[in-house]
Amino acid sequence: MATLPEINPTTDEVKIKDIQVGDPGIQTTEEIERLRQRIWNYRHLLIGKGNALQPAARGVVCDIDVGDAKPIAQRVRKIAPRFREKLSELIKGLLSAKMIRYSRSPWASPIVVIVKKNGVDIRLCIDYRLVNSLTQLMVYPMPLINDLLEDLDKVLWYCSLDMASGFWVVTMTDRARAISAFITPFGLFEWNRMPFGLKIYQRLIDNALYGFTRIPPLGSDLRSTDVFEVGEADGPGKPSVIGRRSYIDGILIPADSWDQLCDRVDALQEACEKWNLSIGMGMSKVEYLGHQISKDGQEANPKDLKALTDLAFPGSL
Image 1 (cartoon, rainbow, N blue to C red):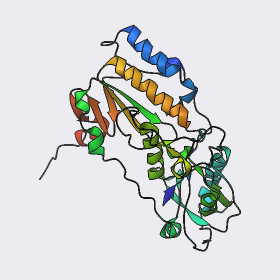
Image 2: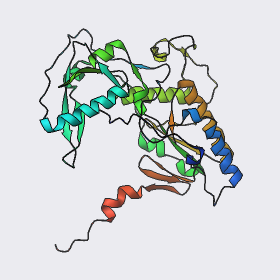
Image 3: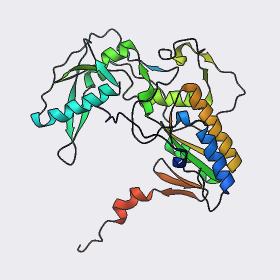
Image 4: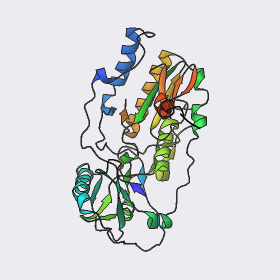
């Protein structure tokens, strides 16, 4: 099952005061303003609250390979009348954000409505099981969380960033759009942007951080170019951007000093500008992969422990 995103067609404008960095009890005002200004210099990359569709990333596309399989067109599934109005609003949001478009594809996968806990709102899923059974899966290793958390207690400063909109920034090939088509009571639609695909997005971020493959010249059509197919290998001897991998769209920048943290934030923003990746906004303690990270070590996130700490003590055996 693939869950359809809930789209807010707008995002809040980012203001320089929204950039929260440093600890006034440790850093000087000059140090805090220096890092804030470096981030603000790349404010065209910053995304505020909301999840409106961001510009497409450069040099990467999503393709779906089903070999010589014949198209599968399934029937639309029944949707309870009380949910049709909400369904139409969700589809309007995706159309308005240009995430989807009307389709004439011979493929059609059915949608499934999942009722949320409040019994009123719904979440949309697409049943791609038949398509998945025909698809040649991409082989790419995802990072191990333990590896990403290793040695983080040996540095003094951290900056945690999220890549805005995640894999929605990856465009689709014409073939992938057709195969992604899904049928609803209101018609047949297909994706303009990749709605899911962790490995494709992880490979994009790894390449942006480590520079394995060079982006094509700006004269080429970067919206339909896959650097992993036609790009050239980047030259050796160039250090990685921050010295570590990300976990999908969550990036942690560790540094031994405030100056190094500022330089690494600059380097990351340069890489994001090169690949047209947006950022959702250094502290001595940050949240990362469900942990609080600081020079004192790793701690479980208190929010994740709340269910245990609030558990009532047994009154009987």
